Length: 268
Image 1 (cartoon, rainbow, N blue to C red):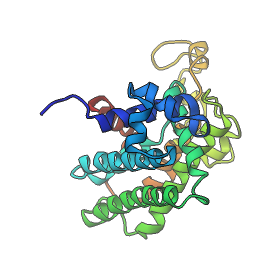
Image 2 (tube, helix red, strand yellow):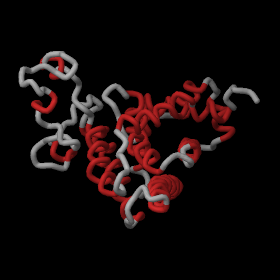
Image 3 (cartoon, helix red, strand yellow):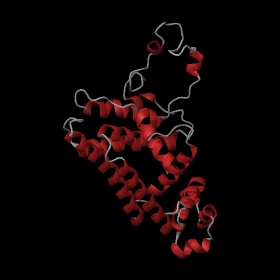
Image 4 (cartoon, rainbow, N blue to C red):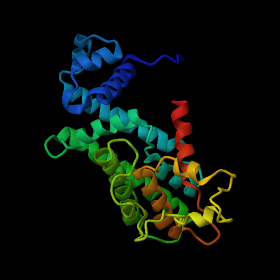
């Protein structure tokens, strides 16, 4: 089989790049044609309107997500859940990814007014909640998780992560500074991160400003602030997932979850 993308895949890749560059409201069929090196007339041969093409694109994206989720179906439930949580983390340098999701957010606002777009959005929501519910059911069956209401817990996880993603791309401007109150992300009233490591003395056992690696406090201060989605994802693992675990089951780190999804991106 050829590794070359089909014409349909090239068009969908062009839609992705055009949405990233222009957003939903301003993107035109000509913009998409330019991005996929196809003629505008060829696009109109397959899709009568921009709406037809964007609905087809949503179907393409959701189908791709379904395939990615199936690829992890045989992994341990806790690893699958950590990977799902990591999927929603947007780092400060993920400019292209954020630009694309801003365009998707524009598309989502059309849901109340456009039945075809709404159908795809409902399908996406069911996929996300269904994925978490399936992970929880599998984990309960094999003793990884305690007995819980899987539907309610899945809805909570998805709403938390999706809400954090929407907040970051609309309020922080992609700069990763986590604009707003840190307490909203860590769920505590003291501003500590979800893992409780809010006290610098814990990382500086000698109390002399040196880090565990022998660096100085200035170097730590220069580190970039975690993005809002990263903080909420960490809080999700610590505050929602950890209490679900059966005795003796270890909680994977958020980095493990992010790495799992990054491996998917590298193989695409």
